[in-house]
Image (tube, rainbow over all chains, first blue to last red; front, top):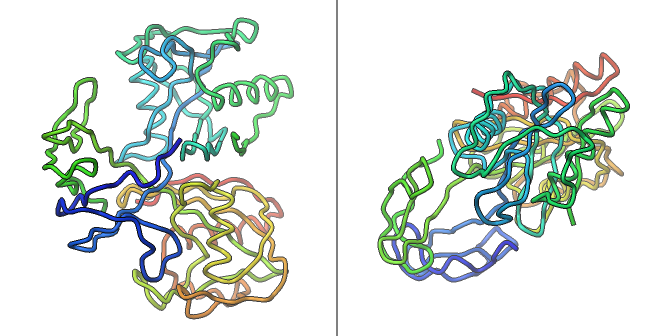
Length: 181
Length: 181
């Protein structure tokens, strides 16, 4: 759950911040009681890939919380200084040691409850030299029959994989936009 | 330009924060010198619509900085508690008083220089009862020939409009993903 009212002090001057509705606004924002700086809180993007090699897809077993030991597509928070595409490729390299070529935006899934937007790209693995980083216990390829559906870390990963296998049967990969309740 | 090193004090305890690379990370983050809270800074989403009525599109003349007096598609920062779609419709209502039905994700444009991702949906205006809010001087409909190309507020608005008119000539509206340098 995204936490409201989590800003207690001003990042600019260190004085106490209080939640109030600024002039020309309609929502409560943390506002500094001394320097009047307004601190906005907004959703974050999680960017990742669905890396494919022939009939198999790459998953990583998480070595960190949350969801330690469960399987995920490589993904993580988008950083300043990069595009969604660059972030997705960076996370793929960091979590799986995998180099990919992106094949288009594939899913954009709102996870309102936690204030996140998950954005996945289809990707083609350039080789099989995997090297899971410190965030992954393991990185390996799965056929559709092998996917550990009961051990997936996130609903957006499940959703993205389900779309992929359905689209693959249809022979046509469209963009999927949706919301995770 | 997104500002690095802009967090000087901890939002949780008010003590001084300093930029350092946390363990298990590879980037400098503002870290509290007392309670060790790490403060992440990430890109923000701007969500909006391209509202259409017959052969015309809706633009709003900005009543606020930046780009006071220039024309924009209705758009603004995505808020916690909403989806990208809900945010796009909210901004359309707030800036133009316009009610729309969304017709699909249309552009996703990275603006790395300022740490933003701009996301536009194609939309159908439900009626012509416009009522520009406090952020707009005016809201009105433009044919392609009437678009004030030299008075547009943002490059992502220009890009989205250019795609729209090109796609309309082709009779086919695809998703456009791109980067604004």
